[in-house]
Length: 224
Image 1 (cartoon, helix red, strand yellow):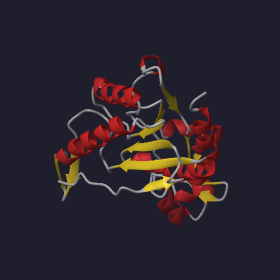
Image 2: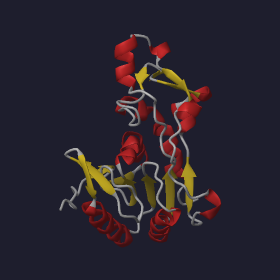
Image 3: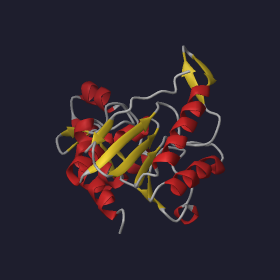
Image 4: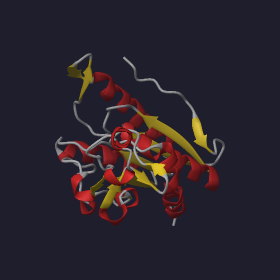
């Protein structure tokens, strides 16, 4: 059962302040800008990401070999990481996950535990989902202007987080960067000369680095 992860530190590894990036592969959307922000502002960054393992307290499934099975290692991994976070008591946790249809209490239990451990918790609103894979669309059409969609057509049917801001723990808040990915209500495969997604819902490293300033603002807000 794969519950191990490398004990790597990013950002400024010897810094006194610690931020943890926690979640499934959608948390990986924010690694590049958060790493750059942590380096610039003197934070140690710990990354705790497991693919297809949403940061919620629910039994999840995973596709494997053309079939679905209980994702038992997700639950085991999540408990290991949450116990580590309890011990670390980090200054900040940035948590992100793929939208889900599980009972909202499954999400709230994890968010409450994170908020009890950390000085501040920032919950990333899930990214948009392009109707087509960005690179495939560009390859097929050869024209970036034919690879853009209204924002309303890219919103996932299930969101993360599902918990309203008013019901979040006092030290937790939602950060929604969809307007940065899809300015003016349009989602484009290419924005400012960079391909936005490497599939339909994971940001490219080159585009996500453009969001570094947003995460520097998050770091500077902690402790105020």
